[in-house]
Image (tube, rainbow, N blue to C red; front, side, top):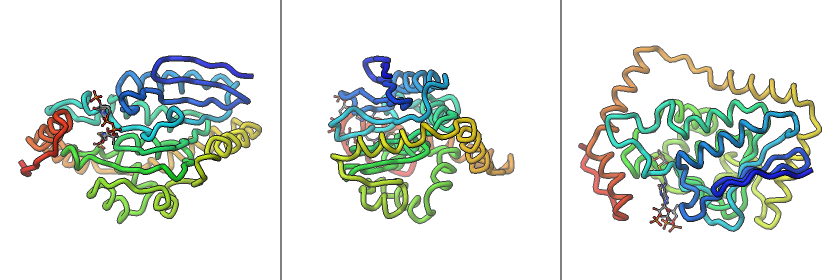
Length: 265
Ligand code: YXS
């Protein structure tokens, strides 16, 4: 049984109770624009019909970039939290985390910035040797958000988190396997078949039990008590960063295709 929803930047194909969502904005390296993220959220929310039992999120075949991360051209410019609760990327992360179906990120190519938060928000990650993973707010002067940092803290050791955030350097596939970022690292020629087999193996399991176990794990992992005063202090510190000249410089440098020169102001 196969059906497909075609939009120019995201496709949804359903086969053997597995829905494959493909990021397809090749020209913009699957930069996570509001349009692409809204299509992703719509695609995900359309799956909870009982016909689908597992989801694969992938990039179009053959791309060397899985996703170039948040669309920099759409980042709010100062005086507004660049990763606020209603940002399309944050809405997409919640859609994946709250979907009552297992979601596998199938990664061929490089993953940048907020796309790493997206991949880590999936329930499992299967990658091939071309995969790399980078988190890049220090390239822009952007103060990553607290929810996002908690996502990383729930998955990765602190020393790795700090190295990735402070260097913005891509972590290569073998390293990602060594740090257990990916569930499986498979040869690129086997990536599609391995991932589909993993997904299909879950389609015969009890969907109600799977959905409630996923939701329990989400609620328990996300339960991070934080004093209101601490949160407000963090938000105040973040505001000073996203209102800084450095943040403007980071975005301008990307748009002008030049290296940023940060002054600490
Ligand atoms: O010049 P045109 O119009 O053809 O467009 C170019 C790029 O401007 C565009 N593009 C992007 N547009 C908006 N946001 C992006 N993140 C983005 N990335 C790329 O796509 C067209 C082709 O790009 P080009 O020529 O650079 O392709 P390439 O194959 O030579 O290089 C691919 C990349 C991914 C290595 C390169 O595009 C790149 O370094 N992109 C930026 C990656 C990045 O820093 N992403 C982080 C975004 S900010 C984010 O996710 C978070 C908020 S945070 O900062 O916290 O991490």
